[in-house]
Amino acid sequence: MPHKRRGLREGSSSYTIEDIIRDIKALNSSVLLLSQKMNYLVRNEKILGRNFIILNKKLKEVEHKKPVSLGSAVSEGISEELKDTLDSLDEGIKNNSLMLNEVKSDLNKMNSVYAKKEDLTELKYIVEAINPLEFITLDQAKELLAGKTPSKPKKKK
Image (tube, rainbow, N blue to C red; front, side, top):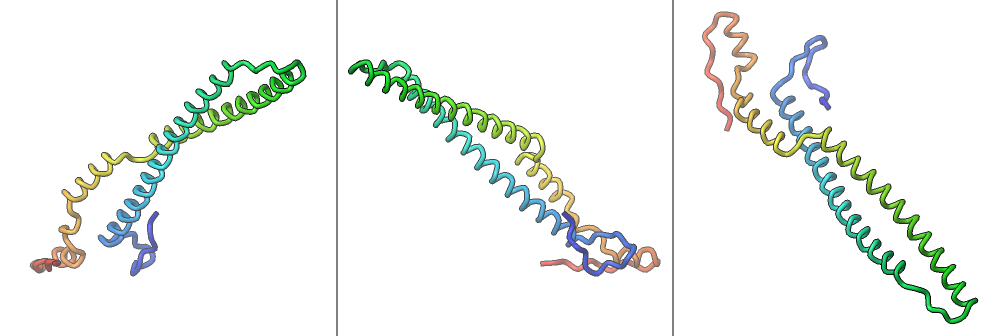
């Protein structure tokens, strides 16, 4: 996302080193934010997975238990109650599994769209190796074209 450039004349399309540095910093902060959000998604996915395992164990326990027969009317009421409860739990599990599949597909999309940490460290290494701050300045280029001897670059501290 390029910033509005200060000091550019209309029709010129040159970037300054400061503009490039500002763009790199903006991109870096965006990538860090996306990385943090991905970590939250992974953590939430793990929590949901544990909850599903616990719910499945509880559901299996309820399925294996047989209703106590206290009388025909009471046992029918309990079994109907259990059936309703099981149906609602089953529906909840189906909804949760659908949501989990959506989260997984979103994570897969994020993995394919966004850069990984290794890629970013490699890009950082390349930018630092090139070190664009040591290139020739505009004034030095104009002096070379004019035929003057170039002045020594001022060193920044």
